[in-house]
Image (cartoon, rainbow, N blue to C red; front, top):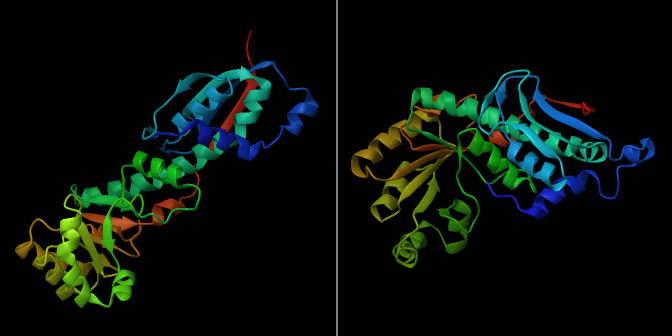
Length: 282
């Protein structure tokens, strides 16, 4: 995952817009020290590469680092470094926030991915674009570390037609007329349509739609519909979305769709990451 220098600076500047007043009053300046981030609970690490960039920006030398996506047990050090007392205290909380939240999302994601793939090893867990505003890149970074994939990174990336679109063009009859031209205009893009009506799903697949996203349907109904669709359109892309979360994911893993679309992973509890700062041994 690529983070710009401006983004790394922003993570630091958010916590220290002008100066570290406490460190300034205590006279913490160039005295050499060490910092280490460790986990108090097991999970999946995420954010270490971003913290390493923060270290580099503040002239902190990385001593130890594990990769995002690695499983971790309580007591494991995620990243450590050495530098001046002033810089160590500057990075302290800003870096901890990245590790806390990203590791929490990565852990929740990995648990859901593992649960789904125990039932269906070919099924993907996909995340929506409904992440917390301003935290999109870190959120995607974290779900990738946990083994999921982004469903849509933005409006410019894919063609997914919702009921809200249909209502603005005059209904499904108009969409049927427009579909061939849309396919011609974007020959390299797949066109998916969201619906909870099985008959409508099959009709649009017959007209050239590449796939269907089933919205807020129960697992039993999706399974019945997906089975029917696979008989006639075996290459179609089928997704399930709407209200899917770790608590019901295994139920939906049996539906025969290609992926489960969820927002729930973005609201993970932070992993409990501790920090130790000490004087550097001479």
